[in-house]
Image (cartoon, rainbow, N blue to C red; front, side, top):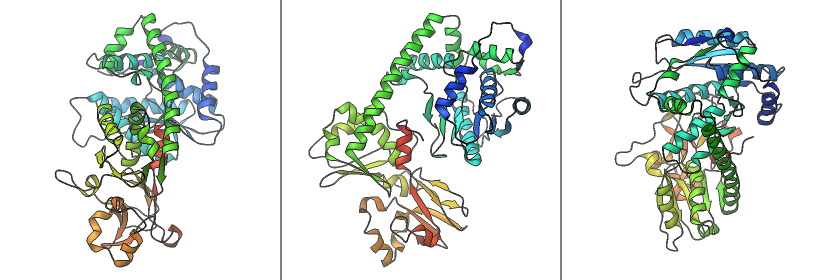
Amino acid sequence: MGAKDVGAKDADASGQNIDTKVFAKLSKLIGQGADTLVVAFSGGGDSTALLSLVVKWAGKRSVCALIVDHGLRDGSRDEAKLALRRALAMGASAKILTCHWQDGIPKTGIQEKARKARYHVLAQACQGIGACKLLLGHNVDDQAETVLMRKDAGSGWRGLAGMAERAAYPVWPIVQDVVIIRPLLMCTREVLRTYNRENGLAWIDDPSNENHQFTRIRVRNQLMGKDDATQKLLIIAKAAREIVEQERGEINQFIQSFTEIYEWGGIAILPGFSKARIGQIAEALKYLIPAISGQETAPNIQKRMQLTRRLRRINFDGATLGGVRFVPRKDDILCVRDPGAVIGRTQVKALPALELAAHKPDIWDGRFKVISKMDAVTVMPLGLWQNTLKDEHRALLNALPETVRACFPVFIRNESIIHIPFVDYPAPTHGFSAVSLIGTRLASLLGHFD
């Protein structure tokens, strides 16, 4: 079934001038920097209104529409080409991105897998453009649907906060500096389509919007025409969002007061940390663990609560959770990457070598941004090269805690170590660099964006 093309002639509705509200929101969320403005553009009603409004607001700044062809049904390529032509007509540059399904088109969990694939290709494109903000067309109806879906799924109150206007990019570690911007969360779906009609903008209706196999479509139909129910969901989301933001501010202050970040990629938990409230510690771990491990998500609340109770014991003797090893020391607890997840253990393979192209930065293990001045260089964990270390290497490594060494990155060329970050000579001498992403990741997870 193909998509339906909808235009100004298809319906008649009273219009609302949303330009002023959206322009004010764009100014607040983006500011007046010189970055290229990137819009995820499907050609649908929401993203059509968003792209038009962004182009009007942008002034002299360039606007790029990124169009994702998921390749999940016949005709998707033609729809992507149509969306490209319409983006160009609105005054934006445009590019079609293609999802590649190495294991074939998925048969189950299609929407979630398509979402992840979409965010991956969008992230890569943003990285190529040099853009650090990606604008999405989610609207107030999407927000209500999200809250109801999470409520039905048994989400805790934090999940009921719904979508934020500014959020960390949902894919890690493919990029470490892209922020999601949602400037239309105060606009209804119908208002956006009214804007399109009044401005003579046609849009595409995706046939998947009628597929009741998808939870969101069933929820959408459940809310259709029920304005009171929608408003109640939005009130819940607003209240939960305010509490979440307040809590994040308190957690951020708590983390700053009772942790120390090491430039080589670890965190020390200071004594006052374990004396805090159990819930506060468990919530702080939600941000600390993925920041240290480089993984995409944190362990669930039950596992974090179990670790919290152990951390509060006087005789805490160490633990591992979510790819992070917690090592008690005399005056603090050192939190570092779990070596087994990096160099391998029973039923867990070692990380594959990361091959670097000259002068092209990449991300290793989700934890370090690495770059090499030359080709034919790989980054691997030090633990796989322990038996080849020279005496000068061993002397240099004395500057690092022993517990961190095995999962530390080293630069390899011609089957030998040519650089050990943070303990070797400074980068200008040799042209290799590794930068820990813990601080960047932690700030992003806590909602602090540049």
